[in-house]
Structure formats: C-alpha cells, structure tokens
Figure (cartoon, rainbow, N blue to C red):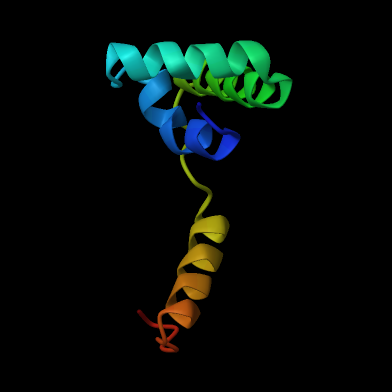
Length: 82
C-alpha cells in the first residue's frame, strides 16, 4: 500500500513518467483514493505547465546583487567586491 509519504517521494518521477508501470499503477490508485495527494499532484502538474509556457525574463541587476550578497553571507564570504 502506498502512503502519502511514498507518493510525495515518487512525485517528480511520476510526473516525468519515469516510474515502473507497476509503481505507476500503485501511485495512480493512491491519488484516486487520497484527495490531498491528488491536489498536490494536480497543482504541481499545472504549475509545471505554466512554468514551461513562460519565457525567460532577465533578473534585474539590483535583485542579482542582493542575491549574490545573501549567498556570499550564507557561504561565509563577506567581501562585497566579489
């Protein structure tokens, strides 16, 4: 029997159709019986479809600079000239 935790662990491969057919049947049975996992699967699938349909947008320089500063701090670097 597939649990919600099992389903979530396999979700990415399930959506990419990279699971064994027997496992896929078990996962499909689970989401047909579990409304919470069905919502997670459906929402994730729709989010991927929306994301794939979008065109890439350049990251504004100010956002890039802030992101680099945060990452530098998280990695232990504090030199703002990096």
